[in-house]
Image 1 (tube, rainbow, N blue to C red):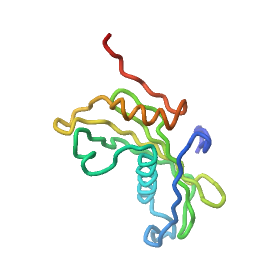
Image 2 (cartoon, rainbow, N blue to C red):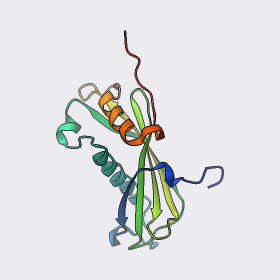
Image 3 (cartoon, rainbow, N blue to C red):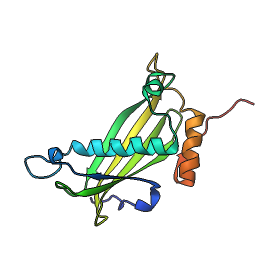
Length: 159
C-alpha cells in the first residue's frame, strides 16, 4: 500500500463485529474479494441505524432515494474461515447531493488492518432519478454523531 496513509481507527465512532462464515471462503481458502463488499455494507447499514436514519422500504421507496455510485476497496491482507472481524464505519463528508461513507476492516483479535473502503452515495429524486440536495435532517443527524470528524457543506439559504 505504497503512498497511502495508514488507516486510522481513531477517526471512527461506529463499529460492528463479524465472523467469517464457511461459504464466504473461496477455493484458495481465503475470503472471496466480493464478500468484502458485503462486510462494508453491513457496517454502513448498522451505522445508519445507530445514528437514527430511517431504514425501511418506505424510506427507500418514498420521497428520497440514496444510491451507491462508486465503491472502492483496498485489500490489505487475506482473511480466512472463522476469523473475527470488526468493521468501522463513518461518514467523512457531505456535499450538496452526495456523501462519502468510509470503512475500515480490522482483524478482531490482532487489530491488524484487513481492508479499507470508500463508498460514494448520491441522493436522488425517486421520480426523476436526478440528483437532489442531501436533506438538512440527514446532515443534522450526521453532524450530531460525527461532530468535526465530518466535513459538512450546508446549502446556502436565501435571506
